[in-house]
Image (cartoon, rainbow, N blue to C red; front, side):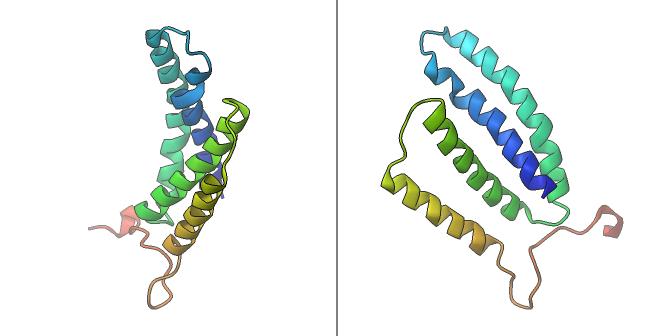
Length: 125
């Protein structure tokens, strides 16, 4: 749960960094870049611990698939509220398919094992 919350918060910052400047297209490009880098710093302060902690119980594949799904969910809200874009039917269907992809990524493999979590550092030679 901690990983999911950190990923959601980090994606709010990253979405603002990548797309927030689109609302003010008169802003000089160098200013938009500097502002985006400043916002992205906070995204990394949340993303790195989320991945570190999440990698203790999930595989990197699972973390990435979950992160991308969160990114898209955050983006839908951002595009709607900040940029004033509307969600079309095909965007909604794509979102449902992505949720299905996340569910498939977290299905247990053959003998009921969950995920491919790496061994703990203590278990490594």
